Structures are given as C-alpha cells and as structure tokens.
Image (cartoon, rainbow, N blue to C red; front, side, top):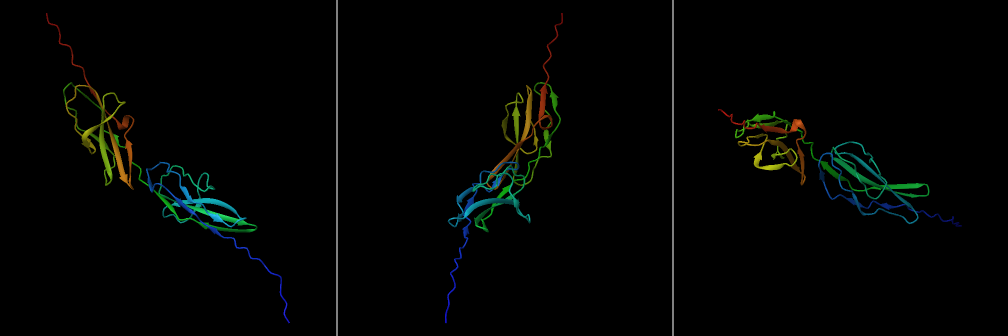
Length: 219
C-alpha cells in the first residue's frame, strides 16, 4: 500500500551583496572623504524586502559598529576622519519571518597623520639695510614625507613662497621694509599631499624696520 502526503513548498530567501567602491584610499587628517558609492546594488528574492546597514571600525579594531550618520542607504557618506577606518555594507533580505543578510567587501580609507603647528622664533626690529638674525620654527615635523617651505609677506595678508627656502631655519637677506614670515608643512603619502601653515602670533615672525632719522639742521 502507498499513501502520499501533501506537498510542501520550501521558498529560499537568497540575497547577493552587490559591490561598493571609493574614489580614494587616503585622506588628510580631519578631512571628509568622498561618498562611498554603490557600484552594484544588492539583489534579494522577488517579494522580499531589501534593506541596507553600514558598519565601520578603526583599522585593526576588533569590533564592527553601526556607522555614524545616515547608514541605511545603498551609498554612505562618512564624516571627518581622524583615524584610518574600514567600512562595510550589509544587505538584508526580509521575507515573512525570515531575515537573511550578507556583507560586501571592505573599503579601507587611510588617514594621514596630524601635521604639527610649529612655534616661531621671536620677532625682530632692525635698521634699514640690516640683515635679521636667522629665523627658526620649533616643533615642525621633519621626518620622512614632510617638506617645510618658508613664505614671506609685506602686509601679513598675502604670502608667497620663498624660492629655495626649505627646512626649519631661514636666513633672510638685508631688508629695507617690514616683512612677515610663516612656515608651511606638507606631508605626502597615499597619493595625496596634506598641507598646514603656521598661524597666529605664535606662528608668524614679524620683522620691523626702523625709519631712518632725519638729519639735524645745524646753523
């Protein structure tokens, strides 16, 4: 004798992760990286509800956590980064009471180190035609990858690079009018250059030039 049961339909809830990409791999410290794009959307079964969730963690960190800001779209816009960070997109397919998920490949955005704000040597006052004492900056980055360039101004507003003036020390020529000096530090790594210029009174060297006194009238 033989008896047949009723049939049971097993509906598989499947999902593919899709792909994501970033136009950059490195940013300057404190910069906002470009949007992480969705180059291929995740695909869920017909009739299932597709949703996304982005997660992030510091490079080398042990635990993923929900990415800051709006993290439920196909794309993701990070805020400003101060540490190298990994991003991943989770795709979720919900059908009835069953939820299935899959993750994309990881996007890594490296963050270049903070550039120091150096402190300038003291301001100077000289007579017309005199040569100032050598200028210097303390605390500037000087290791591999860093370049320090001196800038000069006549009004402390518009500054121009001094040709060939690199390093943390600079000897100006004889001066006949007031000048101001700053130091610009550039760090290059990961295909980008990050720049910081000394600022404020602590980051500016002012050289004042005394006026030539009038010759006395002797009668």
